[in-house]
Length: 115
Length: 152
Image 1 (cartoon, rainbow over the protein chains, first blue to last red):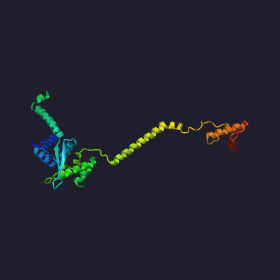
Image 2 (cartoon, rainbow over the protein chains, first blue to last red):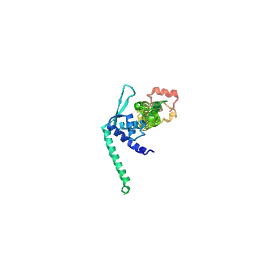
Image 3 (cartoon, rainbow over the protein chains, first blue to last red):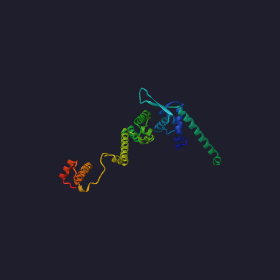
């Protein structure tokens, strides 16, 4: 595996928070989110993983959507974060930071972790 | 079958509503495909992609009607059994409140059967009256005894 690529398990765990974080920057449609995720290192990000995730977010009222129609084409589904989504992002960020700190402590000083 | 048809079929199998299926198809159509990309390469096979949506129990109008009909049938059957077990004895006791209590036929009548207890008692009285040589009030019954050959 390319060392630059994120581990699939990490991607699976981090993807929901990454999507919420991207939507916190502003409303975006699915294709744009996939592009941004790929730029961030989620190289395997696909519509097949993103849309079901966004649907679950919508069911949990973390995200809303709006269909934007151009003059031609099928239209674009634009997603936006709700206040509940922002709170969820904050809470996930806190949890992720705690896990990161714990792992850093464990790896940098193994004796402390086992004592 | 096209990718969209396969996906529709798979989503129906997973119990998604028609509105939800329409929304998924609209998303799939709206997602731009670059260069060599295909719907299958972006979303996975129809089966795989449909599995990322929650499986639901779908309740159609027909299944709702069948469920209600079965419930009504079960309730009716239980009610019938309960009435038969608990209520019938009560009903039997009160079915013919006007009927006279059963009396065994007098010895002279043997095993002959009469249509009602009232007729039996009338004939019995007529037979007794004849034995005692007193005029019977039951003239018609008396005549009936004569014609049927009943002896005291």
